[in-house]
Image (cartoon, rainbow, N blue to C red):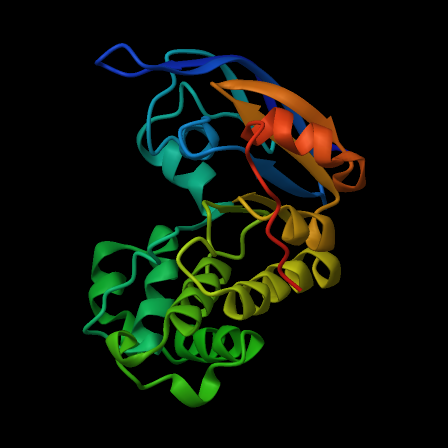
Length: 255
């Protein structure tokens, strides 16, 4: 299979001197469900945000779909980002708008300013948005304001919004960290279906090894900005888990 992501010797040093990423080398193939594991502050979110240039890396190379992300600017960067759906821990939705309108905002990377102002009146876009809400089981909630939905429902709206881009890749930055265990599993189920049914590449940062084992095809573990493990989720035993998270860490099961 072809690499959809190629990262070479990636470093990120923040303005106050924190060296968040230290020479990351990582390839991700098309159709993989790659899980990023590690403590808070290990570099998972920084790595994901460098991939779509929400933050600038300090040095190194990032290529996504054979495109150079690091040097991309303006329309070129916008074109690259169309191929990357982003899902955030805190959902990043517009709470006073309906679920349907929030999903439609996922199309903004493809349209002109004039279209974006009038996009709720475009029948084709609305039909696609409704189809994407249906995919995540929320078609009946299309006209409800997002602020009236549960956390799990809001995250599913965020997944539907990402699908509006028709992406080749989804980056999910701790998408279930603020959800209860049962809801977390239900959200991961939808990401898993996209990966298996659509062969969509997913890179997802998590804290729960049980979810990594259930949905991931590969795990990449970070510690202090460096990759300390790369392999199958089944290879992570108690000893390896404690090497990643610390000697006092205990695995929490989500079934």
